[in-house]
Length: 315
Image: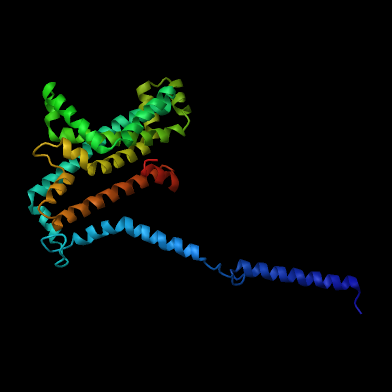
């Protein structure tokens, strides 16, 4: 007959063996089947609601992309699947001119916005003071002002510069479109560059000055290098924002330099054709490529997914 001490020893040994067996099964991934948590009706409802919201946002874009492969004469009448709309772009000078004007205007506007916005962002980050909040307020005013107000203000201003002051460059349609499209984009670039530099210490620039580097050398090799990811992202965002600046373009354009958004508006009078959807699809792909490059540049610079999303949404 075993004693109480021997019984306790046996029970402890069995318990240790059971724990060891459970640990071994857990290490092999065989810890035993887990009961799945049953999804509540609220989870299912939110999933369905999210799907409906996504369809509401992207269904019009999907419709345009699908109808860009329509072989019919009108966009609203589906005749068949084909690439006739894309090939017709190559033989219509009006469409080619409108697309070329939009691309050239967006490129020039992006350059203007990048130069001005980068300098403004660096100044706000490296020379803080009460003036920064006033300047940020002005940039915010530019960002929230309705485009129709900007367009109405720009038209007489451009006429005043071109005719009354004799600055013939402001009579050129490309110059007008570039300047008008760069206003909002400059504010966006300023936000991005400032947000990039505010979180970084200025010790590298101080060390460069201590090593007798000139201010220009410090700016070029230190400050601009630190801000370069934000500068590139701002340039690409400014380019995409300038492509669809319809209201300002409709007011400041001159004859012979009709951008693509204004061309689409004028085409509504005679009926939309499939080539309109084809060029819109190409513009959409170009915009997605630019946004993808923005995300890639920011990711390589070490930004998190949340920071990339805030940058791409202007936050």
